[in-house]
Length: 453
Image 1 (cartoon, rainbow, N blue to C red):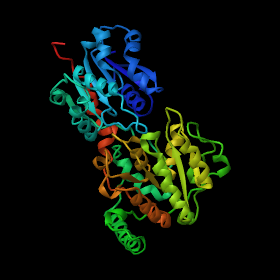
Image 2 (tube, rainbow, N blue to C red; image 1 turned 180 degrees about the horizontal axis):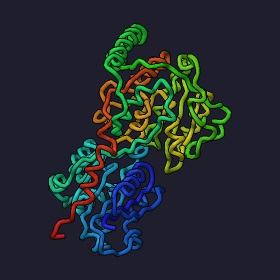
Image 3 (cartoon, rainbow, N blue to C red; image 1 turned 180 degrees about the vertical axis):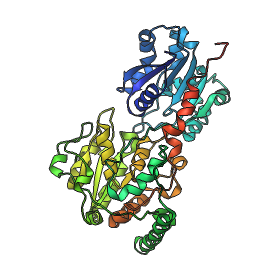
Image 4 (spheres, helix red, strand yellow; image 1 turned 30 degrees about the vertical axis):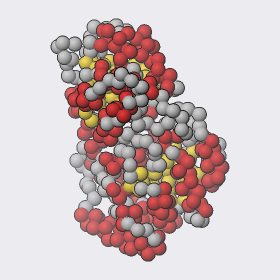
């Protein structure tokens, strides 16, 4: 094997990336540690891998994420130091939020800076990730009381590039309800399926006319100040409905466990004009404190206090203790809950996304956002903060500036869910697909190391 892939935190998007690379590219061998106790992985994984990765002469490239202390590994294993070393940043510790107001641990960010100095190529999953890291180095190093190193940004920047996280979008046609068929056609086009006909100009025009009527109604009743808050582009489609999972089944699942009793096929419950009356289905496919579940649940409770009807699915993998807010919110939301907890089976996960109408992010940090893009691929209308990486990925109409704006958007969506179900996403998905990015990764992982290494 010529490509050695090391992943110190084998879970979530970290796992998704290295599994994809090993599956799609030749001559890759993978060594991992489970996605548990992140802080300890960052501290000691290098020593573990130095003892457990066999010495082989045919390795040419080392690919690892920034969780690993690459400096320690190459010091402990000089043979690996001779390889072309590629460091991939899923997130960076210089701007990563900390719980409550505890002091940031200097060592994690410092280790990432050292790893960049050792690496030959440093790859970020977004421009926001790259720039937030590089421009924070100077301020971060001022935490050192004296004898501070200089010019680190200028040394590291020439090594850096952005290659978006590659998503291998699956075939979800068997899960897609009828009212999302036009959306499905558009999404299939990014997979290189030339036989799929894109929505016609007539359908686009009809969508815009419907949008104008809806916006006019919203402005009269909502009191919103800006058109952006209610810029709800729509595509005219046949409506359909999905049957709600029995709420008594939901009560037996919790965060971190697989939801039971999912419908085998959403088409089984389609029928008549049910879609017109089915409540808005909101999905939140995130994890942990850094995605700010408190703000999300606060908005949902405000909708409930207004007497608005909606359904919610809370999904996403958790790697630490589950915050109390999840169990409290589940109890308070009661029969509004459709699904609650991590779905280990990808088919189950994508089926829920296809059944949902709106995907919401309330993140305090986000460097890319795989879950949001997967939900959009499945036909969900995205609502994201106007901050972090989101303006880089999503058009302005899908962004909100305050929790109050998010609440107003969802209030109107709850009143007219049928309009949201006719929406056709206006942003780009192709730049984030494996089909578009595989050439860049193949080139990255096949280039020979420098002769002087």
